[in-house]
Image (cartoon, rainbow, N blue to C red; front, top):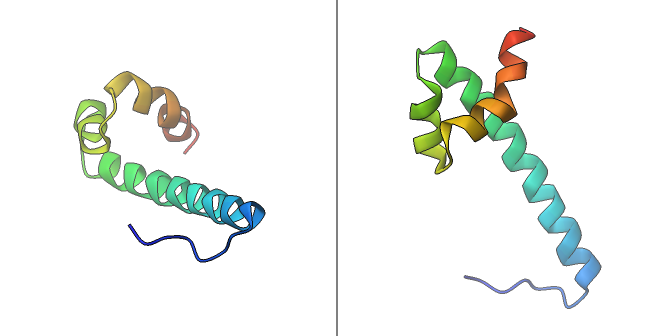
Length: 66
């Protein structure tokens, strides 16, 4: 893993926050695509390395609001 170039913790933490937000947006998009393609919550959970219950709890409400 390449080292962060800045010695400033604030810079590094802002970068981590930005990466978390990006990962969340990508996850939301691809969970929706997987559900539209007929994937089960278990299939999605397996792909993400989490339980079907946790992925359903996180994303199931979005599906009901569509």
